Image (cartoon, rainbow, N blue to C red; front, top):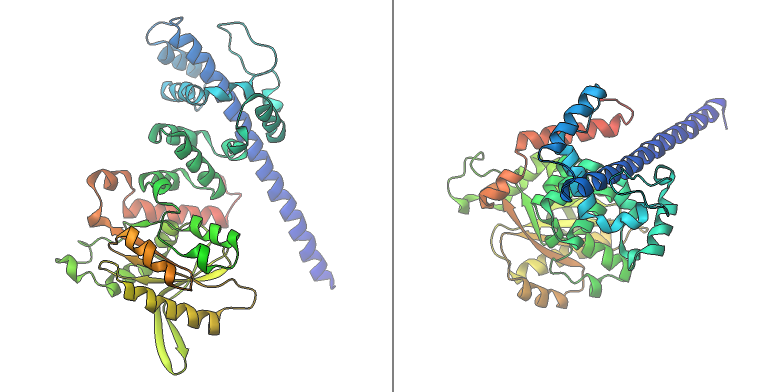
Length: 396
């Protein structure tokens, strides 16, 4: 190894250590902040709900805090109410946050050792004191920020659904706006529900499970604005128009698809046995370790689409797939389908395929349009996330 190579290796080793340390420090700060907010939320809940405080107490306390601690951020009256909500909605977590010694009523109780509890200790306490705790994503719960928690609590009511978004926000490191978008798109009810034959067509059960969990049964392509494209009749919205809109907004499309997707090419040329074929969109998914062929259809699902896609997958596996890669997967994106019918007929095909529908901006309800960021806001979000990825140490 040359001196230059040794220096390169040393730089990378030190860089990795620094970044890991920064990540661990940020995570520790977040965990302690959540413990603090939970304790403050409990204190406010006990005193405001039991009639110990008069009307307007939270506003008055917030104003006093601002005067006595100038520059203090995060303790507005609204945020104090959010802390109360955080405690009240997760009140059964109190056993995990509490120390053995109960505080006197009316005093602010923050667990004596709560600021020192790491995720592992916290998990042991949780499992000891609360039933059915193994299914609770504790590590993810402590990983996401308070603003993420507040958003989930305000927009989602069912426990299972809340846990889904907590897991997703932590696993995919979603920004606040990305999480808001996921909730608005109702990903909980669409994730893993597409008609597919993955269990029958994929050789490994874990691969089939990952594939089912990766795809949704409906995608919101809200960046395809029919009016902006100058299309008067929706019947003119053919596959090429949709495809071109996706290509010009490929970052948006990948954001809609989820993490681990890498775009390879549109109209990907397959040349086998003298037959020219073209896949509308070709991706690679790192988690699934396979090629993903996407076919766009603007009408209702037809069984002939499955035969066409199966042919593409056969050629992909026979001529394009690398030895270390898993079998290619196909996805048909169409405007409408009878899910029961699709789920029935797709089982007779040997290649792993799924069918999902999509909506453009014109298809969405007014409520959903208002919940989703407009295209300019989304572009700014994507640019900001890309900049953060390239400059992880940049302070804002």
